[in-house]
Length: 385
Image (tube, rainbow, N blue to C red; front, side):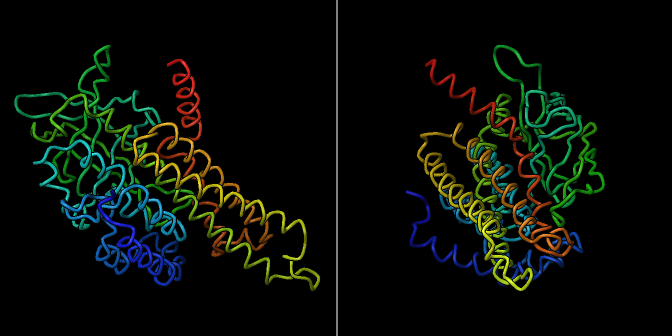
């Protein structure tokens, strides 16, 4: 049984639904123009528990399991993806590393503050030469007396400009037959030697900040090694990313629903030669393809989340859901621009922003190509067993 019953979860979902539709959607243009989430919205999100909805209740979170997480993600995907990004790393790839692999002392020190939003945690895995495949990691951690010393560079790190804590993956030794040699560390952002570059200028997702982070002779105590285990890093990354992939798939479904709704509303009201364009069969065909993608994606996400929670499938399913749903939302967004015609190419029109925002979903937390390798290789290995 999940920590939160379905009866208790329903009002949480309704509250988030209303918050997104009534408070955030009307301010999307403001967020895009300022490239920032208004402080008022950040405060409201924290008060609602959104910085810790997937953190266990014993550590101050709401304790939602993945089947409930994806329902919230589909709500959050309906608006600018920058809002979700603000607290996504706390609940997802960064927070889950601590939840799944941290010692009790590490959890006590950080998780309640992460869940409340007092601390923003950032997942520092990607490097210039190691993106979707963590095996290429070059950041090093060397034991020196009682401390670890970290050197290396991370790239495209979500929330880096506002992070209070970095969850840093580093190599303690070369990979060999005994393991990957990848460990994961807790590095407070104010530690000497941590340098965050200027925030990246991106194609879309204005208000969601990423940046390079450089670690130069960063000295942290031995107790900062997550789980006290030098071999935990690769396993923690893979586990956290698999869960995150289901979340991203759900987010894509939410955004696809928004693109569909915008398309239907436009088709029903815009006219061509005095006829509503929604009366044209080729426009109806585009709407039909959008609707079919949304329905298939939603069903896939829900089944994948159930299988993840039960333990039936925590590898092939998450990759399949992320692959299908992120490719699907790209197609739905493209069709949305097409339905809008020239209007859809104009800035300040929701489908134009959506078109740019969703392109990233096929890249982060493992590209579509990496998902295909995970799925295909996993199926072959399963058959051989």
